[in-house]
Image (tube, rainbow, N blue to C red; front, side, top):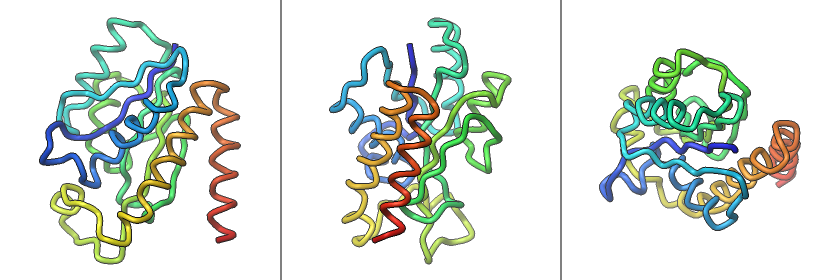
Length: 175
């Protein structure tokens, strides 16, 4: 059994913010319905995501290699994706919460770039605001592509997900 966890904040107020792009990917994944996969949309705020993930791990006992966390990344340009089998939090408080709660960095993560030219020094308001008009046009395609990477990971494993991501990035570079 695989577990895909989206990071985001609960409630309508945050629904369309940059911080909630992980939830948007889960919504898209629901349409694809990967078998033997549990989609987890924690009811906690981003900075407390680890508590929800720890509860799942304690209850369901998955191997950490069967967890994929999907989140925003202010260090990646808008539309870019980065898939890693493990690693640090990279400044993301939600990932840090998961790492601290599990006592391990040994879980996969798919980071989705939300950075743009007008990104301020104070990141809190930035990640809690919506996307600009140009980004909103591109967002459905980005979310769909991220969902396809997650689906590849869930159905066919790590190598398939990396191959899918590489294919998507090659197409993007040719555009």
